Image (tube, rainbow, N blue to C red; front, side, top):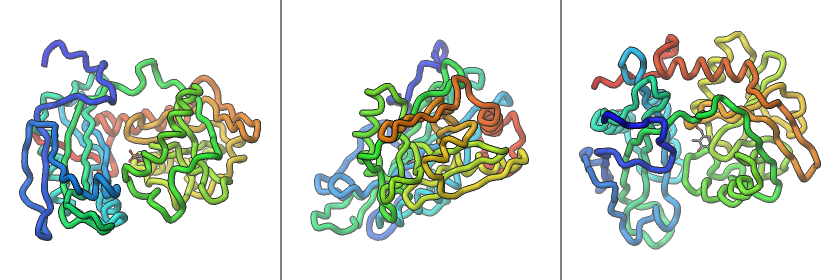
Amino acid sequence: MENINWKEFGFGYTKTDYNVRCQFRDGKWGQLEISSSDQINVHIAATGLHYGQQAFEGMKAFRGPDGKVRIFRLDENGKRLQNSCNGIMMAKMSLELFEEAILKAVKLNARWIPPYESGASLYIRPVLFGNGAQVGVNPASEYTFAVFVMPVGPYFKEGFKPTDYVVYREYDRAAPQGTGTFKVGGNYAASLQAGTRAHNEGYSAVLFLDAKEKKYIDECGPANFFGIKDNTYVTPKSESILPSITNKSLCQIAEDLGMAVERRRVAVEELADFKEAGACGTAAVISPIRKIVDADHQKEYVYGDEAGKVSLKLYETLRGIQYGTIEDKHNWNTIVEL
Ligand SMILES: *Cc1c(COP(=O)(O)O)cnc(C)c1O
């Protein structure tokens, strides 16, 4: 693996050596299987294909300066996948089996875990879907779980730079009491039109409002939203957003740093009160926001060309915990025994 330019890896797809799979049949999960193919067998009448019975997860493994490899909040990702499975009536895995599968996939691809100095990491993508033939609309009786890993370069190649976000009122990502709290592909399909338009208009993402009243902030497609004011970390509470594990971790870090944390409804107009704003998720940890454009209401909420001090501190603390350079006092990391 000499001469690899780790910084070059994007979020497209990079084939690594092995992936791990497991089949649910006859009411139980089978043995973990190892494969070197990146193709998967899907039944022509699979519910995952026809009716969106599908959920996924996303987390990362980091190689620290001490040489140790850490997976960030593995158990939380396992619990969230279970919750998504309950939400769309799929067979769920035990946390033990989930963790065993992830650890196996990381260990088998150890040579793909980027060195600390590169600033890159190993992205872990588990997916679970209905793979039993079922043409009538019912939950499948067979499921496939698979996990692959791939190196991803540092998210901020040009530094921790804020970008622009946009509010549109003519698109919804998820309905209140719908599937917004589950990590299912259908929510992403529902966000593609708005997201593509945002990119075409020069924004990095859409800030979705609550679908019912269009009064409150929901989230930014694949990332949660937070704002900072008066030494307080404010993040929306909503029935249609995905509980981000990064957000949950940032709330804890903010508290550890002596800040107040508020998880409550956030009205669009409150965007004017924040001194800093950001989107948070596994991919970037924090994507600082330069401005949010609400064209329907002829408003712009501007936070500045440089990331704020609090966002930077939160970002550096979380990254430090992930790479093992800051004490992991809440036991968030799972050390991989290579
Ligand atoms: C995965 C995801 C996030 C971010 O969650 P993390 O656990 O922090 O990676 C936010 N919103 C949506 C809709 C997601 O699917």
